[in-house]
Image (cartoon, rainbow over the protein chains, first blue to last red):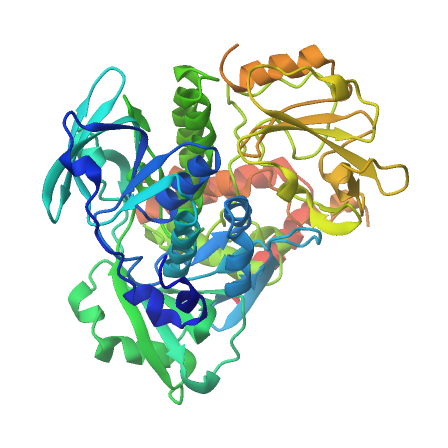
Length: 563
Length: 68
Protein backbone atom coordinates (compact mmCIF):
# COMPACT_ATOMS: atom_id res chain seq x y z
CA UNK A 1 0.00 0.00 0.00
CA UNK A 2 1.43 3.31 -1.07
CA UNK A 3 0.65 5.41 1.95
CA UNK A 4 1.46 2.76 4.48
CA UNK A 5 3.84 4.84 6.53
CA UNK A 6 1.39 7.69 6.89
CA UNK A 7 -1.46 5.36 7.65
CA UNK A 8 0.24 3.89 10.65
CA UNK A 9 0.86 7.21 12.31
CA UNK A 10 -2.16 9.25 11.35
CA UNK A 11 -5.40 9.67 13.23
CA UNK A 12 -8.84 8.13 12.88
CA UNK A 13 -9.93 10.14 9.90
CA UNK A 14 -7.34 8.64 7.58
CA UNK A 15 -8.73 5.13 7.71
CA UNK A 16 -12.21 6.40 7.19
CA UNK A 17 -11.24 8.69 4.33
CA UNK A 18 -8.97 6.18 2.64
CA UNK A 19 -9.99 5.37 -0.94
CA UNK A 20 -8.59 2.27 -2.61
CA UNK A 21 -8.08 2.81 -6.32
CA UNK A 22 -9.95 0.75 -8.88
CA UNK A 23 -7.54 -0.72 -11.39
CA UNK A 24 -8.19 -2.62 -14.60
CA UNK A 25 -7.12 -6.23 -14.55
CA UNK A 26 -5.99 -8.34 -17.52
CA UNK A 27 -8.95 -10.63 -16.67
CA UNK A 28 -11.23 -7.96 -18.16
CA UNK A 29 -9.80 -8.55 -21.64
CA UNK A 30 -9.60 -12.34 -21.96
CA UNK A 31 -11.90 -14.98 -23.44
CA UNK A 32 -12.65 -17.53 -22.22
CA UNK A 33 -12.79 -16.07 -18.70
CA UNK A 34 -9.72 -16.43 -16.51
CA UNK A 35 -9.94 -19.31 -14.02
CA UNK A 36 -8.85 -18.81 -10.37
CA UNK A 37 -8.79 -21.31 -7.52
CA UNK A 38 -10.67 -19.04 -5.09
CA UNK A 39 -12.58 -15.80 -5.48
CA UNK A 40 -13.52 -14.18 -2.18
CA UNK A 41 -16.39 -11.69 -2.41
CA UNK A 42 -16.37 -8.91 0.18
CA UNK A 43 -13.33 -7.19 1.73
CA UNK A 44 -14.74 -6.79 5.23
CA UNK A 45 -13.13 -8.43 8.26
CA UNK A 46 -14.28 -11.91 7.18
CA UNK A 47 -13.26 -11.72 3.52
CA UNK A 48 -9.91 -10.13 4.33
CA UNK A 49 -9.16 -12.72 7.02
CA UNK A 50 -10.05 -15.55 4.65
CA UNK A 51 -7.92 -14.13 1.82
CA UNK A 52 -4.89 -13.69 4.09
CA UNK A 53 -5.30 -17.17 5.56
CA UNK A 54 -5.48 -18.74 2.08
CA UNK A 55 -2.50 -16.75 0.81
CA UNK A 56 -0.49 -17.84 3.86
CA UNK A 57 -1.27 -21.40 2.75
CA UNK A 58 0.00 -20.71 -0.80
CA UNK A 59 -3.45 -20.42 -2.39
CA UNK A 60 -3.78 -17.47 -4.78
CA UNK A 61 -6.90 -15.40 -4.08
CA UNK A 62 -8.88 -12.82 -6.00
CA UNK A 63 -10.69 -10.60 -3.50
CA UNK A 64 -13.59 -8.55 -4.91
CA UNK A 65 -15.25 -5.62 -3.17
CA UNK A 66 -18.13 -3.56 -4.50
CA UNK A 67 -16.82 -0.42 -2.79
CA UNK A 68 -13.49 1.36 -2.49
CA UNK A 69 -13.52 2.24 1.19
CA UNK A 70 -13.24 0.61 4.60
CA UNK A 71 -16.10 0.34 7.09
CA UNK A 72 -18.13 3.51 7.38
CA UNK A 73 -18.43 4.18 11.12
CA UNK A 74 -17.02 2.12 14.00
CA UNK A 75 -19.65 -0.68 13.63
CA UNK A 76 -18.33 -3.95 15.09
CA UNK A 77 -16.13 -2.70 17.91
CA UNK A 78 -15.72 -5.73 20.21
CA UNK A 79 -13.13 -8.26 19.07
CA UNK A 80 -12.90 -11.37 21.19
CA UNK A 81 -9.86 -13.27 22.42
CA UNK A 82 -10.27 -16.08 19.88
CA UNK A 83 -10.59 -13.61 17.01
CA UNK A 84 -7.42 -11.85 18.14
CA UNK A 85 -5.62 -15.19 18.26
CA UNK A 86 -6.68 -15.77 14.65
CA UNK A 87 -5.59 -12.25 13.64
CA UNK A 88 -2.25 -12.90 15.33
CA UNK A 89 -1.77 -15.98 13.15
CA UNK A 90 -2.65 -13.78 10.16
CA UNK A 91 0.03 -11.28 11.16
CA UNK A 92 -1.79 -8.40 12.83
CA UNK A 93 -3.22 -9.50 16.21
CA UNK A 94 -0.59 -7.77 18.31
CA UNK A 95 -1.00 -4.55 16.35
CA UNK A 96 -4.74 -4.59 17.05
CA UNK A 97 -4.10 -5.34 20.71
CA UNK A 98 -1.69 -2.40 20.92
CA UNK A 99 -4.19 -0.02 19.33
CA UNK A 100 -7.37 -1.37 20.95
CA UNK A 101 -8.83 -0.83 24.39
CA UNK A 102 -8.42 -4.08 26.36
CA UNK A 103 -11.14 -4.99 28.77
CA UNK A 104 -12.24 -7.94 30.85
CA UNK A 105 -14.68 -6.41 33.33
CA UNK A 106 -18.38 -5.79 32.81
CA UNK A 107 -20.77 -4.02 35.17
CA UNK A 108 -24.53 -4.35 35.24
CA UNK A 109 -26.81 -1.67 36.66
CA UNK A 110 -30.53 -1.81 37.41
CA UNK A 111 -32.23 1.54 37.80
CA UNK A 112 -29.97 3.46 40.21
CA UNK A 113 -27.79 0.65 41.50
CA UNK A 114 -24.99 -1.59 40.31
CA UNK A 115 -26.28 -5.14 40.74
CA UNK A 116 -23.04 -6.93 39.95
CA UNK A 117 -19.84 -7.00 37.95
CA UNK A 118 -18.07 -9.83 36.15
CA UNK A 119 -14.55 -10.60 34.96
CA UNK A 120 -14.47 -12.47 31.66
CA UNK A 121 -10.87 -13.59 31.97
CA UNK A 122 -10.19 -14.11 35.65
CA UNK A 123 -7.03 -16.17 35.08
CA UNK A 124 -3.65 -14.91 33.97
CA UNK A 125 -1.46 -16.53 31.33
CA UNK A 126 -3.09 -15.58 28.02
CA UNK A 127 -1.53 -13.40 25.31
CA UNK A 128 -4.86 -11.75 24.54
CA UNK A 129 -7.53 -10.31 26.85
CA UNK A 130 -11.18 -11.43 26.72
CA UNK A 131 -11.92 -8.49 24.43
CA UNK A 132 -10.51 -5.42 22.83
CA UNK A 133 -12.62 -2.59 21.56
CA UNK A 134 -11.40 -1.32 18.21
CA UNK A 135 -13.27 0.46 15.47
CA UNK A 136 -14.03 -1.82 12.54
CA UNK A 137 -12.21 0.52 10.15
CA UNK A 138 -8.95 -0.09 12.04
CA UNK A 139 -9.48 -3.85 11.93
CA UNK A 140 -10.19 -3.71 8.21
CA UNK A 141 -7.36 -1.24 7.63
CA UNK A 142 -4.79 -3.41 9.42
CA UNK A 143 -6.02 -6.52 7.61
CA UNK A 144 -5.94 -4.67 4.26
CA UNK A 145 -2.36 -3.60 4.92
CA UNK A 146 -1.42 -7.15 5.81
CA UNK A 147 -3.15 -8.40 2.65
CA UNK A 148 -1.19 -5.87 0.59
CA UNK A 149 2.03 -7.53 1.78
CA UNK A 150 0.99 -10.85 0.26
CA UNK A 151 1.61 -11.14 -3.49
CA UNK A 152 -0.87 -14.03 -3.78
CA UNK A 153 -3.78 -11.68 -2.97
CA UNK A 154 -5.25 -9.70 -5.87
CA UNK A 155 -7.71 -7.16 -4.39
CA UNK A 156 -10.11 -5.60 -6.88
CA UNK A 157 -12.07 -2.63 -5.59
CA UNK A 158 -15.24 -1.29 -7.24
CA UNK A 159 -15.92 -4.79 -8.45
CA UNK A 160 -19.47 -5.97 -7.69
CA UNK A 161 -20.70 -9.47 -8.39
CA UNK A 162 -23.85 -9.25 -10.48
CA UNK A 163 -24.14 -12.73 -11.96
CA UNK A 164 -23.43 -16.35 -11.04
CA UNK A 165 -23.50 -19.57 -13.06
CA UNK A 166 -22.80 -22.80 -11.23
CA UNK A 167 -21.00 -25.56 -13.14
CA UNK A 168 -19.92 -29.00 -11.97
CA UNK A 169 -16.38 -27.99 -11.14
CA UNK A 170 -16.37 -24.19 -11.15
CA UNK A 171 -18.57 -21.13 -10.84
CA UNK A 172 -18.66 -18.29 -13.36
CA UNK A 173 -19.11 -14.82 -11.89
CA UNK A 174 -20.12 -11.66 -13.68
CA UNK A 175 -18.25 -8.75 -12.14
CA UNK A 176 -19.44 -5.19 -12.69
CA UNK A 177 -16.78 -2.48 -12.67
CA UNK A 178 -16.54 1.20 -13.63
CA UNK A 179 -15.32 -0.10 -17.03
CA UNK A 180 -18.31 -2.39 -17.42
CA UNK A 181 -18.81 -6.08 -16.67
CA UNK A 182 -16.48 -9.03 -17.20
CA UNK A 183 -16.57 -12.72 -16.39
CA UNK A 184 -14.39 -14.61 -14.00
CA UNK A 185 -14.27 -18.34 -13.21
CA UNK A 186 -13.50 -19.73 -9.79
CA UNK A 187 -13.12 -23.27 -8.55
CA UNK A 188 -14.62 -21.97 -5.32
CA UNK A 189 -16.36 -18.74 -4.38
CA UNK A 190 -16.41 -17.55 -0.78
CA UNK A 191 -19.35 -15.21 -0.20
CA UNK A 192 -18.27 -12.85 2.58
CA UNK A 193 -20.46 -10.06 1.27
CA UNK A 194 -22.43 -9.20 4.37
CA UNK A 195 -26.02 -9.29 5.53
CA UNK A 196 -27.40 -8.04 2.22
CA UNK A 197 -25.29 -10.59 0.33
CA UNK A 198 -25.58 -10.38 -3.46
CA UNK A 199 -24.32 -13.96 -3.72
CA UNK A 200 -27.07 -15.21 -1.43
CA UNK A 201 -29.64 -13.67 -3.73
CA UNK A 202 -27.88 -15.09 -6.77
CA UNK A 203 -28.15 -18.63 -5.38
CA UNK A 204 -31.81 -17.92 -4.59
CA UNK A 205 -31.53 -18.34 -0.83
CA UNK A 206 -32.83 -16.44 2.17
CA UNK A 207 -31.80 -16.51 5.81
CA UNK A 208 -34.52 -17.64 8.20
CA UNK A 209 -35.11 -16.64 11.80
CA UNK A 210 -36.59 -13.99 14.09
CA UNK A 211 -36.70 -10.26 13.53
CA UNK A 212 -36.92 -8.28 16.76
CA UNK A 213 -39.34 -5.40 16.85
CA UNK A 214 -37.09 -2.92 18.55
CA UNK A 215 -34.86 -0.07 17.51
CA UNK A 216 -31.50 0.95 18.90
CA UNK A 217 -29.42 4.08 18.53
CA UNK A 218 -25.64 3.96 18.38
CA UNK A 219 -23.96 7.22 19.29
CA UNK A 220 -20.16 7.38 19.08
CA UNK A 221 -18.97 10.44 20.92
CA UNK A 222 -15.55 11.97 21.46
CA UNK A 223 -15.16 13.60 24.86
CA UNK A 224 -13.42 16.95 24.89
CA UNK A 225 -10.46 16.84 27.31
CA UNK A 226 -11.91 13.79 29.00
CA UNK A 227 -14.62 15.85 30.62
CA UNK A 228 -17.65 13.97 31.76
CA UNK A 229 -20.05 13.92 34.67
CA UNK A 230 -19.36 10.25 35.45
CA UNK A 231 -16.20 8.32 36.13
CA UNK A 232 -15.72 6.37 32.90
CA UNK A 233 -13.57 3.24 32.65
CA UNK A 234 -12.36 0.71 30.11
CA UNK A 235 -15.17 -1.69 31.00
CA UNK A 236 -18.50 -2.77 29.57
CA UNK A 237 -21.34 -0.99 31.39
CA UNK A 238 -24.89 -2.09 30.89
CA UNK A 239 -27.95 -0.42 32.39
CA UNK A 240 -31.40 -1.94 32.69
CA UNK A 241 -34.05 0.74 33.04
CA UNK A 242 -31.77 3.59 34.19
CA UNK A 243 -33.23 6.88 35.40
CA UNK A 244 -31.49 8.76 32.57
CA UNK A 245 -33.19 6.57 29.95
CA UNK A 246 -36.23 5.03 31.64
CA UNK A 247 -37.80 1.71 30.63
CA UNK A 248 -35.03 0.96 28.13
CA UNK A 249 -31.48 -0.38 28.19
CA UNK A 250 -28.18 1.42 27.60
CA UNK A 251 -24.74 -0.01 26.82
CA UNK A 252 -21.50 1.96 27.16
CA UNK A 253 -18.10 0.99 25.74
CA UNK A 254 -14.73 2.72 25.44
CA UNK A 255 -12.98 2.87 22.06
CA UNK A 256 -9.49 4.09 21.11
CA UNK A 257 -8.89 7.77 20.32
CA UNK A 258 -11.08 8.98 23.20
CA UNK A 259 -14.27 7.73 21.53
CA UNK A 260 -17.17 6.24 23.52
CA UNK A 261 -19.86 3.99 22.10
CA UNK A 262 -23.28 4.47 23.64
CA UNK A 263 -26.06 2.16 22.55
CA UNK A 264 -29.57 3.31 23.53
CA UNK A 265 -32.60 1.07 23.22
CA UNK A 266 -35.37 3.19 21.68
CA UNK A 267 -38.37 0.87 21.30
CA UNK A 268 -40.16 -0.11 18.12
CA UNK A 269 -42.15 3.11 17.77
CA UNK A 270 -39.09 5.36 17.54
CA UNK A 271 -38.68 7.24 14.27
CA UNK A 272 -35.23 6.33 12.88
CA UNK A 273 -34.84 9.53 10.86
CA UNK A 274 -35.69 11.76 13.84
CA UNK A 275 -33.52 9.79 16.27
CA UNK A 276 -30.47 10.15 14.01
CA UNK A 277 -30.56 13.96 14.24
CA UNK A 278 -27.86 15.45 16.47
CA UNK A 279 -30.37 17.68 18.26
CA UNK A 280 -32.15 14.53 19.45
CA UNK A 281 -29.02 12.52 20.25
CA UNK A 282 -27.20 15.17 22.29
CA UNK A 283 -29.85 15.37 25.06
CA UNK A 284 -29.79 11.57 25.43
CA UNK A 285 -25.99 11.62 25.83
CA UNK A 286 -26.13 14.51 28.30
CA UNK A 287 -28.72 12.63 30.34
CA UNK A 288 -26.08 9.93 30.81
CA UNK A 289 -22.87 11.99 31.09
CA UNK A 290 -24.28 15.05 32.82
CA UNK A 291 -25.24 18.51 31.50
CA UNK A 292 -21.62 19.73 31.71
CA UNK A 293 -20.20 17.04 29.45
CA UNK A 294 -18.48 18.41 26.36
CA UNK A 295 -18.28 16.10 23.40
CA UNK A 296 -18.44 15.80 19.66
CA UNK A 297 -20.72 13.37 17.90
CA UNK A 298 -18.49 11.10 15.75
CA UNK A 299 -21.00 8.74 14.21
CA UNK A 300 -24.60 7.74 14.78
CA UNK A 301 -26.79 4.97 13.47
CA UNK A 302 -30.27 3.66 14.22
CA UNK A 303 -30.60 -0.07 13.70
CA UNK A 304 -32.85 -3.07 14.06
CA UNK A 305 -31.67 -6.65 13.98
CA UNK A 306 -32.63 -10.24 13.34
CA UNK A 307 -31.32 -13.56 14.58
CA UNK A 308 -31.28 -15.76 11.50
CA UNK A 309 -29.21 -17.95 9.23
CA UNK A 310 -29.18 -19.65 5.85
CA UNK A 311 -30.34 -23.26 5.97
CA UNK A 312 -27.07 -24.37 4.39
CA UNK A 313 -23.76 -22.48 4.18
CA UNK A 314 -22.68 -24.32 1.03
CA UNK A 315 -24.42 -24.09 -2.31
CA UNK A 316 -22.45 -25.92 -4.97
CA UNK A 317 -19.22 -24.05 -5.50
CA UNK A 318 -20.28 -21.12 -3.30
CA UNK A 319 -19.51 -21.10 0.43
CA UNK A 320 -21.07 -18.48 2.69
CA UNK A 321 -19.23 -16.98 5.67
CA UNK A 322 -20.02 -14.21 8.13
CA UNK A 323 -23.13 -12.02 7.95
CA UNK A 324 -24.07 -13.35 4.51
CA UNK A 325 -24.70 -16.71 6.20
CA UNK A 326 -26.02 -15.70 9.61
CA UNK A 327 -27.09 -12.71 11.67
CA UNK A 328 -27.32 -12.02 15.40
CA UNK A 329 -28.09 -9.13 17.72
CA UNK A 330 -25.11 -7.03 18.82
CA UNK A 331 -25.48 -8.19 22.45
CA UNK A 332 -22.67 -10.68 22.86
CA UNK A 333 -20.42 -9.46 20.04
CA UNK A 334 -21.11 -12.62 18.09
CA UNK A 335 -21.35 -11.14 14.57
CA UNK A 336 -17.90 -10.22 13.31
CA UNK A 337 -16.27 -12.61 15.79
CA UNK A 338 -18.17 -15.63 14.52
CA UNK A 339 -17.56 -14.51 10.93
CA UNK A 340 -13.79 -14.51 11.42
CA UNK A 341 -14.10 -17.99 12.93
CA UNK A 342 -16.06 -19.07 9.83
CA UNK A 343 -13.18 -17.79 7.71
CA UNK A 344 -10.63 -19.72 9.74
CA UNK A 345 -12.68 -22.91 9.50
CA UNK A 346 -13.02 -22.50 5.72
CA UNK A 347 -9.46 -21.47 4.84
CA UNK A 348 -7.60 -24.67 5.71
CA UNK A 349 -10.32 -26.85 4.22
CA UNK A 350 -10.27 -25.00 0.90
CA UNK A 351 -6.47 -25.20 0.90
CA UNK A 352 -6.50 -28.95 1.60
CA UNK A 353 -9.05 -29.61 -1.15
CA UNK A 354 -7.33 -27.37 -3.72
CA UNK A 355 -3.96 -28.98 -2.94
CA UNK A 356 -5.41 -32.46 -3.41
CA UNK A 357 -5.09 -33.54 0.21
CA UNK A 358 -8.80 -33.87 0.88
CA UNK A 359 -12.09 -34.18 -0.96
CA UNK A 360 -15.52 -32.60 -1.05
CA UNK A 361 -16.50 -34.19 2.26
CA UNK A 362 -14.07 -31.86 4.05
CA UNK A 363 -15.65 -28.81 2.46
CA UNK A 364 -19.08 -30.09 3.42
CA UNK A 365 -17.88 -30.26 7.03
CA UNK A 366 -17.42 -26.48 6.86
CA UNK A 367 -21.17 -26.11 6.51
CA UNK A 368 -21.96 -28.60 9.27
CA UNK A 369 -19.50 -27.14 11.77
CA UNK A 370 -20.28 -23.49 11.20
CA UNK A 371 -24.06 -23.99 11.01
CA UNK A 372 -23.75 -25.62 14.43
CA UNK A 373 -21.71 -22.64 15.67
CA UNK A 374 -24.23 -20.21 14.16
CA UNK A 375 -27.06 -21.97 16.00
CA UNK A 376 -25.16 -21.57 19.27
CA UNK A 377 -24.58 -17.89 18.57
CA UNK A 378 -28.20 -17.32 17.55
CA UNK A 379 -29.45 -19.13 20.66
CA UNK A 380 -27.29 -17.02 22.96
CA UNK A 381 -28.08 -13.83 21.13
CA UNK A 382 -31.84 -14.44 21.11
CA UNK A 383 -31.87 -15.22 24.83
CA UNK A 384 -29.93 -12.06 25.66
CA UNK A 385 -32.27 -10.00 23.53
CA UNK A 386 -35.33 -11.53 25.19
CA UNK A 387 -33.89 -10.67 28.61
CA UNK A 388 -32.87 -7.13 27.64
CA UNK A 389 -36.12 -6.34 25.82
CA UNK A 390 -38.90 -8.42 27.45
CA UNK A 391 -41.69 -9.23 25.01
CA UNK A 392 -44.53 -9.53 27.54
CA UNK A 393 -45.57 -8.18 30.92
CA UNK A 394 -44.75 -11.46 32.65
CA UNK A 395 -41.35 -11.64 30.95
CA UNK A 396 -40.64 -8.14 32.21
CA UNK A 397 -41.83 -9.10 35.72
CA UNK A 398 -39.41 -12.03 35.89
CA UNK A 399 -36.61 -9.96 34.37
CA UNK A 400 -36.99 -7.26 37.00
CA UNK A 401 -37.31 -9.88 39.77
CA UNK A 402 -34.01 -11.44 38.65
CA UNK A 403 -32.33 -8.02 38.69
CA UNK A 404 -33.72 -7.21 42.14
CA UNK A 405 -32.47 -10.51 43.56
CA UNK A 406 -29.09 -10.17 41.84
CA UNK A 407 -28.05 -7.41 44.22
CA UNK A 408 -28.06 -9.76 47.22
CA UNK A 409 -28.10 -13.29 45.84
CA UNK A 410 -25.36 -14.78 43.69
CA UNK A 411 -27.63 -17.31 41.99
CA UNK A 412 -29.67 -14.57 40.32
CA UNK A 413 -26.54 -13.10 38.75
CA UNK A 414 -26.16 -16.26 36.68
CA UNK A 415 -29.59 -15.55 35.17
CA UNK A 416 -28.98 -11.85 34.42
CA UNK A 417 -28.31 -11.71 30.70
CA UNK A 418 -26.98 -8.50 29.15
CA UNK A 419 -25.29 -10.53 26.42
CA UNK A 420 -23.44 -13.84 26.66
CA UNK A 421 -20.16 -12.63 25.24
CA UNK A 422 -18.54 -14.34 22.31
CA UNK A 423 -16.51 -17.46 22.95
CA UNK A 424 -15.64 -19.92 20.18
CA UNK A 425 -18.10 -22.77 19.68
CA UNK A 426 -16.85 -26.18 20.75
CA UNK A 427 -17.65 -28.39 17.76
CA UNK A 428 -18.84 -31.32 19.89
CA UNK A 429 -20.58 -33.33 17.18
CA UNK A 430 -18.12 -32.77 14.36
CA UNK A 431 -17.45 -35.84 12.21
CA UNK A 432 -13.82 -34.67 12.06
CA UNK A 433 -13.37 -35.42 15.77
CA UNK A 434 -11.87 -38.70 16.91
CA UNK A 435 -13.91 -40.07 19.79
CA UNK A 436 -11.96 -39.99 22.97
CA UNK A 437 -11.02 -43.39 24.35
CA UNK A 438 -8.84 -42.28 27.27
CA UNK A 439 -9.82 -40.64 30.52
CA UNK A 440 -9.52 -36.84 30.49
CA UNK A 441 -10.99 -33.89 32.30
CA UNK A 442 -11.01 -30.20 31.40
CA UNK A 443 -12.34 -28.20 28.49
CA UNK A 444 -9.91 -29.29 25.75
CA UNK A 445 -12.30 -31.90 24.39
CA UNK A 446 -12.28 -32.81 20.70
CA UNK A 447 -13.90 -29.86 18.92
CA UNK A 448 -12.63 -27.18 21.34
CA UNK A 449 -10.54 -24.20 20.20
CA UNK A 450 -7.03 -24.67 21.62
CA UNK A 451 -6.25 -22.84 24.85
CA UNK A 452 -3.21 -20.60 24.96
CA UNK A 453 -0.53 -20.82 27.65
CA UNK A 454 2.69 -18.99 28.48
CA UNK A 455 5.81 -20.90 27.40
CA UNK A 456 9.53 -20.45 27.04
CA UNK A 457 11.01 -20.85 23.58
CA UNK A 458 14.82 -20.89 23.41
CA UNK A 459 14.83 -19.21 26.79
CA UNK A 460 12.48 -16.40 25.78
CA UNK A 461 8.95 -15.79 27.08
CA UNK A 462 6.45 -16.73 24.38
CA UNK A 463 2.95 -18.12 23.82
CA UNK A 464 1.89 -21.62 22.89
CA UNK A 465 -0.54 -20.60 20.14
CA UNK A 466 2.15 -18.62 18.35
CA UNK A 467 3.93 -21.91 17.70
CA UNK A 468 1.09 -23.52 15.79
CA UNK A 469 1.95 -23.10 12.13
CA UNK A 470 -0.60 -21.97 9.58
CA UNK A 471 -1.95 -24.70 7.33
CA UNK A 472 -0.46 -27.43 9.47
CA UNK A 473 -1.80 -30.02 11.88
CA UNK A 474 0.10 -29.99 15.17
CA UNK A 475 0.61 -32.82 17.62
CA UNK A 476 1.27 -31.36 21.07
CA UNK A 477 3.40 -33.97 22.80
CA UNK A 478 3.62 -33.44 26.54
CA UNK A 479 6.54 -34.43 28.70
CA UNK A 480 7.97 -37.43 26.90
CA UNK A 481 10.88 -36.22 24.85
CA UNK A 482 11.51 -39.70 23.41
CA UNK A 483 7.94 -40.05 22.17
CA UNK A 484 7.18 -42.66 19.54
CA UNK A 485 5.86 -39.82 17.42
CA UNK A 486 9.41 -38.55 16.92
CA UNK A 487 9.88 -41.07 14.17
CA UNK A 488 6.47 -40.38 12.73
CA UNK A 489 6.76 -41.15 9.04
CA UNK A 490 5.44 -38.61 6.58
CA UNK A 491 1.73 -39.29 6.71
CA UNK A 492 1.39 -38.35 3.06
CA UNK A 493 -1.88 -36.65 3.92
CA UNK A 494 -1.08 -33.23 5.14
CA UNK A 495 1.69 -31.40 6.96
CA UNK A 496 1.97 -32.50 10.58
CA UNK A 497 4.21 -30.79 13.06
CA UNK A 498 5.22 -32.44 16.32
CA UNK A 499 5.60 -29.87 19.07
CA UNK A 500 7.14 -31.03 22.33
CA UNK A 501 6.08 -29.36 25.55
CA UNK A 502 8.43 -30.04 28.44
CA UNK A 503 7.81 -29.32 32.12
CA UNK A 504 9.66 -26.37 33.63
CA UNK A 505 11.84 -28.68 35.70
CA UNK A 506 13.60 -31.13 33.47
CA UNK A 507 15.51 -31.46 30.27
CA UNK A 508 14.26 -29.67 27.20
CA UNK A 509 15.55 -30.06 23.66
CA UNK A 510 16.39 -27.02 21.56
CA UNK A 511 13.10 -27.26 19.66
CA UNK A 512 10.99 -27.84 22.75
CA UNK A 513 8.53 -25.44 24.34
CA UNK A 514 8.95 -25.18 28.08
CA UNK A 515 5.72 -25.09 30.08
CA UNK A 516 6.95 -22.18 32.18
CA UNK A 517 4.15 -22.06 34.74
CA UNK A 518 2.69 -25.52 34.19
CA UNK A 519 -0.39 -23.92 32.65
CA UNK A 520 -0.18 -25.78 29.34
CA UNK A 521 -0.30 -29.14 31.13
CA UNK A 522 -3.05 -27.86 33.41
CA UNK A 523 -5.24 -26.49 30.63
CA UNK A 524 -4.84 -29.61 28.47
CA UNK A 525 -5.08 -32.00 31.45
CA UNK A 526 -1.78 -33.43 30.24
CA UNK A 527 0.40 -36.09 31.82
CA UNK A 528 3.77 -37.25 30.48
CA UNK A 529 3.00 -38.95 27.17
CA UNK A 530 -0.27 -37.12 26.51
CA UNK A 531 -0.73 -36.12 22.88
CA UNK A 532 -3.27 -33.55 21.69
CA UNK A 533 -3.86 -33.31 17.95
CA UNK A 534 -4.80 -29.84 16.68
CA UNK A 535 -6.28 -29.03 13.29
CA UNK A 536 -4.84 -26.17 11.22
CA UNK A 537 -7.61 -23.93 12.64
CA UNK A 538 -6.33 -24.71 16.14
CA UNK A 539 -9.29 -26.84 17.16
CA UNK A 540 -8.60 -30.05 19.06
CA UNK A 541 -9.55 -33.09 16.96
CA UNK A 542 -8.13 -35.91 19.10
CA UNK A 543 -6.31 -36.56 22.38
CA UNK A 544 -4.71 -39.61 23.93
CA UNK A 545 -2.70 -40.60 26.99
CA UNK A 546 -0.19 -42.63 24.92
CA UNK A 547 -1.09 -42.98 21.25
CA UNK A 548 0.55 -45.14 18.63
CA UNK A 549 1.61 -43.70 15.29
CA UNK A 550 -1.36 -45.54 13.77
CA UNK A 551 -3.74 -43.74 16.17
CA UNK A 552 -2.44 -40.40 14.98
CA UNK A 553 -2.69 -41.38 11.31
CA UNK A 554 -6.27 -42.51 11.74
CA UNK A 555 -7.18 -39.27 13.50
CA UNK A 556 -5.57 -37.24 10.71
CA UNK A 557 -7.52 -39.13 8.08
CA UNK A 558 -10.68 -38.56 10.04
CA UNK A 559 -9.95 -34.83 10.48
CA UNK A 560 -9.53 -34.55 6.70
CA UNK A 561 -12.84 -36.41 6.15
CA UNK A 562 -10.94 -39.16 4.32
CA UNK A 563 -11.92 -41.94 6.70
CA UNK B 1 -27.35 -25.24 61.17
CA UNK B 2 -27.32 -28.18 58.79
CA UNK B 3 -26.55 -27.00 55.25
CA UNK B 4 -29.72 -28.70 54.06
CA UNK B 5 -31.75 -26.51 56.42
CA UNK B 6 -30.24 -23.36 54.88
CA UNK B 7 -31.63 -21.61 51.79
CA UNK B 8 -29.05 -21.89 49.04
CA UNK B 9 -28.76 -18.63 47.11
CA UNK B 10 -25.41 -19.50 45.56
CA UNK B 11 -25.48 -20.47 41.86
CA UNK B 12 -27.11 -23.91 41.71
CA UNK B 13 -28.97 -24.04 38.40
CA UNK B 14 -27.36 -26.53 36.01
CA UNK B 15 -28.09 -24.33 32.98
CA UNK B 16 -29.46 -20.90 33.98
CA UNK B 17 -30.16 -19.73 30.42
CA UNK B 18 -31.97 -22.96 29.53
CA UNK B 19 -34.12 -22.66 32.64
CA UNK B 20 -34.94 -19.00 32.11
CA UNK B 21 -35.94 -19.57 28.49
CA UNK B 22 -38.19 -22.48 29.52
CA UNK B 23 -39.75 -20.37 32.28
CA UNK B 24 -40.63 -17.52 29.92
CA UNK B 25 -41.79 -19.97 27.25
CA UNK B 26 -44.16 -21.58 29.77
CA UNK B 27 -46.00 -18.26 29.95
CA UNK B 28 -46.21 -17.82 26.20
CA UNK B 29 -49.61 -16.54 25.04
CA UNK B 30 -51.16 -16.62 28.54
CA UNK B 31 -53.34 -13.80 29.88
CA UNK B 32 -52.18 -11.94 32.96
CA UNK B 33 -54.52 -13.95 35.21
CA UNK B 34 -53.45 -17.22 33.65
CA UNK B 35 -49.78 -16.26 34.14
CA UNK B 36 -50.36 -15.42 37.78
CA UNK B 37 -52.13 -18.72 38.29
CA UNK B 38 -49.26 -20.55 36.61
CA UNK B 39 -46.79 -18.82 38.92
CA UNK B 40 -48.88 -19.80 41.95
CA UNK B 41 -48.94 -23.44 40.91
CA UNK B 42 -45.21 -23.32 40.17
CA UNK B 43 -44.41 -21.91 43.64
CA UNK B 44 -46.50 -24.64 45.30
CA UNK B 45 -44.89 -27.41 43.25
CA UNK B 46 -41.37 -26.19 44.03
CA UNK B 47 -42.25 -25.64 47.71
CA UNK B 48 -43.43 -29.22 48.00
CA UNK B 49 -40.25 -30.41 46.33
CA UNK B 50 -38.16 -28.50 48.89
CA UNK B 51 -40.37 -29.57 51.76
CA UNK B 52 -38.30 -28.14 54.63
CA UNK B 53 -40.22 -25.48 56.51
CA UNK B 54 -37.21 -23.45 57.62
CA UNK B 55 -35.84 -23.26 54.06
CA UNK B 56 -39.21 -22.20 52.71
CA UNK B 57 -39.48 -19.51 55.36
CA UNK B 58 -36.05 -18.17 54.47
CA UNK B 59 -37.08 -18.07 50.82
CA UNK B 60 -40.26 -16.20 51.68
CA UNK B 61 -38.24 -13.71 53.72
CA UNK B 62 -35.70 -13.18 50.93
CA UNK B 63 -38.43 -12.64 48.37
CA UNK B 64 -40.30 -10.33 50.72
CA UNK B 65 -37.15 -8.29 51.48
CA UNK B 66 -36.82 -7.17 47.86
CA UNK B 67 -40.45 -6.03 47.82
CA UNK B 68 -40.14 -3.62 50.74
